[in-house]
Image (cartoon, rainbow over all chains, first blue to last red; front, side):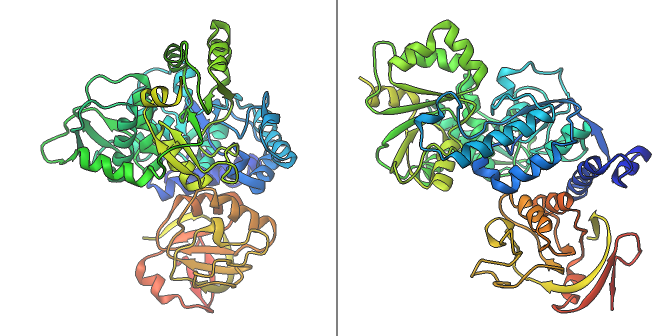
Length: 384
Length: 129
């Protein structure tokens, strides 16, 4: 990889230890991905926030570098482990809470916007077409590349942090060129968000860095997010191209049989003890729609609803939150179903969700059973 | 293919694994000892070795494990892989542990217990003592 004289000097440590480490990360990442150079980025979105995933090593590392590391571009942040407004309602120990708050403090000290959201594309303005960004949250990277005309690779927590500090990323892979290895033809009729989540999960398995996809028809935001979330969970692929692809590209069908395979892999329970909605977190349109669906109805079991704090505040002003709480929803901002410490297999055997991304992590990280249902079925079956 | 991912100049004794390494969950982050019974380096210490293995696997959070063993003075002095993966690359970058990749042929030549020196500024990256 070619470095400018200034970049070489930073790599040698002439701009301090933190810059040196950040350059080491980008050079190592760039060499590993055959980048030719570093290019400027305008926005970084960081993962590695939830104490449940990064642990003591992550907390100590962030605390140490936050003494002098500062971000130099707009930088937003993934969800953490809980919502401070209602954390006392859940069984989280003091150590978890204090370590999580230390992580929060480190990021804020570095100048990161404490958005605690996995849907930055829905709560922040999108820069102009073709802008290079560095998104570490997989569903956000896929959404940015596929729907928002931005360019990012599927960054790691570390490459995104180094990019936030330096304001550059290695010029490689999807930033440079887009060569879909396969065209997926959607053959399942009458799809809902669960179908699109399974389609995304399938695409992530067969895709290399990007895929073509055809036969989709009109999709709402919930379905788009479900598809991006599904893809981000199952592989390294980070882009949908909405096209047939050229005639030489391999074509494969996503049909009822393939869908059933994904369903069988992730659906491990007949029913759930509680329901979770939001992985990715819900946006204002989804909250509005959920409120309408729950009019005059109430959940018969616990239902956790995950959303960004900014969406919660807007929804509060409109009156949605009062209505959702009346229907029995637990409203949680700043955190997400994905890798939540708030669901523990000691208390819960199985969870009902309409999220494929959520299902994957509930099954593999929380170790609970998963019962997949679309939102429509959840409202029909679980409310009265 | 030869790549320099993290540069540096060190020498040490080779600890070689033919299994890939998942740093998260396989390596004790305090002692630097391989704690996974199913790994061919089970109970071996990584401390001060030149760790030679095909590649890293598993969660990118494993990069923090590499950072931890370095902080606890139980890390290898260098790592040599056949294939560059992002977890090991970023972990070595965080911890400032020299990391290079080498060809399959050269990988076969390196034997457990060999004393070698590594210098990323030299034309021959590896010097056999």
